[in-house]
Image 1 (cartoon, rainbow, N blue to C red):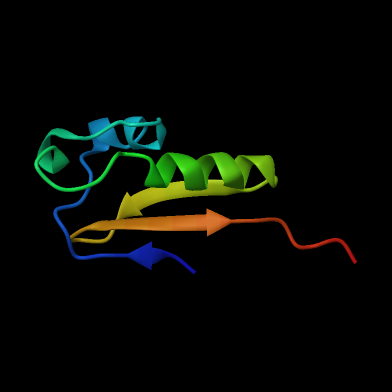
Image 2 (cartoon, rainbow, N blue to C red):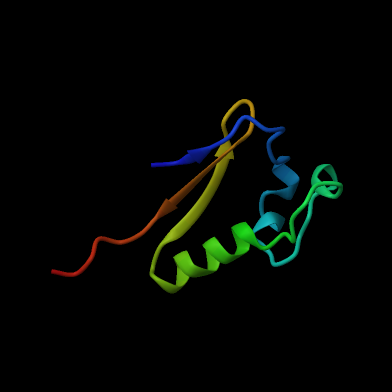
Length: 72
């Protein structure tokens, strides 16, 4: 299930960058935060064999975390 919000969204040119540690897009530089959230989620997803994908929600971003099924 994706997580969405109705904020300003993430420009296509910034989408690969927001998964890097401490990256802050121009639109978010004046807001609180350290730029770590999506990079931490993305790193943990990869460590567990999963993925994090970004898409548009019109307005705002849609973030989907996919993890493999647990082993039985």
